[in-house]
Image (cartoon, rainbow, N blue to C red; front, side, top):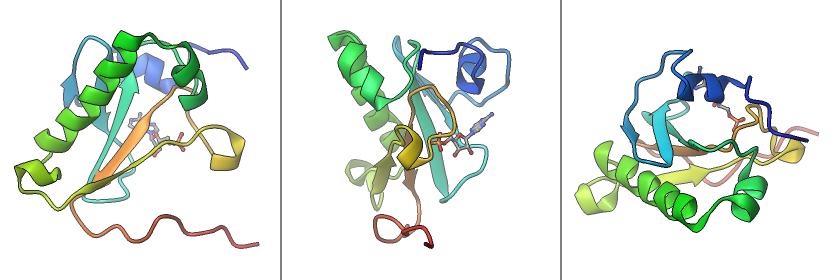
Length: 126
Ligand code: AMP
């Protein structure tokens, strides 16, 4: 599968679809998830066109990887969920591919917090 720049997050990056820009640096952008699953639910995406964590972890530059990791930490502090700013903590999730039901084919990390969000995952009903 090759990267398709018509995906919704690419459109947000280009400003074609509105999103509240909670934080951005040279390599990453953060905005609220449109369908929040916790009191705080923010998506952090790279500005480069990467399909998934699989793609990003192999093909992004060291500068992109470092900046992306830093952006996640900044978002956790800005939103008040990080322990270092008195928050109660947070969970990071990334869905990569079919088994994980990845919906949007532009790499993103979900940051969830602001309330108790339960144990890891709820298995699908078989
Ligand atoms: P995933 O299953 O990890 O690919 O999750 C995609 C996420 O993108 C979902 O949680 C959606 O609610 C979210 N989403 C889809 N469209 C938008 C949008 N326009 N703005 C913000 N979040 C979105």
